Amino acid sequence: MSTPRRTFAIISHPDAGKTTLTEKLLLYAGAIEEAGAVKARAGRQRDATSDWMEMERERGISITSTVLQFEHRGHIFNLLDTPGHRDFSEDTYRVLSAVDAAVIVLDAAKGIEDQTLKLFEVARNRGIPLITFVNKCDRPSLLPLEILDDIEEQLGLQPTPVTWPIGTGIEFQGVADRRDRSFWRFERTAHGAKAASEEQFDSGRLIEFGEVGRASAADIELLDEVGADHDQKRFLAGETTPVFFGSALWNFGVRLLLDAVVDYAPPPSPRPDIEGTPQRLDGQFSGFVFKIQANLDPRHRDRVAYLRVCSGRFERGMDLTNHRTQKPFGTKYAHQLFGRERDTVEVAEVGDIVGLVNAGDLVIGDTLSESGDVRFPPIPTFAPEHFRQAYNLDTGRYKQFRKGMEQLDEEGVIQVLRHPDRGDQQPVLAAVGPLQYEVAVRRLETEYGAKIDLQPTPYSIARRTDAEGAAVLAKLRDCEVLTRSDGALLALFHNVHRLEAARKNNPGILLDTIVVA
Image (cartoon, rainbow, N blue to C red; front, side, top):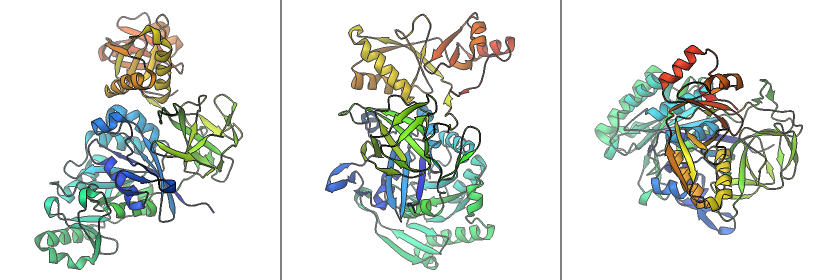
């Protein structure tokens, strides 16, 4: 029997502490000895941050998703850290297509924020159950009951607190576990680099902590009276969310959250193919590509396709078939991923993420299987909202410019749109958010040696169309139809008024805002 798997993502609004929490989960699982240093094989030390890009370290935000595999309590975890900034929401959407559950991180002082709500909607649309971690309880914050109300009102989920904070801000003493009536008191460690020492008491001793303890005991009694207890069936149905309180920075409540992923998060289940037929977990091997990343290690300058194993058993060297192309695909170069680090993987089970190296023939959304007959639903892309004309500043490096554009497009960093007359010479770079341009410009220069200039365009909105619609739209004022690299036709408009006029006068020619390849 294979080791049980838990494949989950961590999502949050920027600055809620998502990346800090990711490192502390690794710390408590024993995957790192202290925050910042991974225990590598043969005693080597390597970087432990999930934010491995230079830009991520400079800005203090996650720009690209990261895969981290480690073990805890006899389970193998596949943790996918995601970008929190809305400009990179497409990357988060792709990651959520590959997980079975998610931990959503809230700032105790802010509760539900705009991006939190958007990420929740994506998770709900995918049927992903959510565990909530209320972070930064060691700082001035909302009352815990106010946070529960916020979750229920804005997310439409019934919060079921599993742990409860004893005090907040400078009075934060630890958390009470409502399941066994225990109280865990934590002590701060230097910079939160080491696992905090823990003392366990019976929660009946809360009164020893004065007014703070009595207030928390009264809150817990109220929660008991209203029946705010965890119900696994309702949680898996997306009706409730178990709530944990703590401080990732100081390691308060992290171990209890880690155990909850084992106890509550579902194992991999049969995944429906595009026809709606679930693929048996013990059937033939199948998996789909949800992410492409080039130059993960600048020394190798290679291209890695992230594959979620959906059924069967992966064995390195097995011959698979790409459903899209019906061409064979060899798996000799397969890696287990830990941030930007990787090791050769011989075997992977359902739920695991495999890095296929030098996978030049693969694109996001591809399905690989033994028979070639399996196809999983395509991963949607968002309609872009920002558009810039790209100019190559060094004509002597045109090949690098073209290669870089092609690679960033395949990764989903930006969408590259081309006009029939201008082609690759002056592509339009389309993005969900403006930070994507900064990433594109930096990576083109540092990884490909191509310097570009981005100039504004008059466009502010795009919608998908077809060949018939494109012929009509091309004749309209303040509208231009460009082709995406996958063949999709996007109609670009100067403003929403032009869009609505085109839709009104030509019903049916404009399609959805989420573009499915």
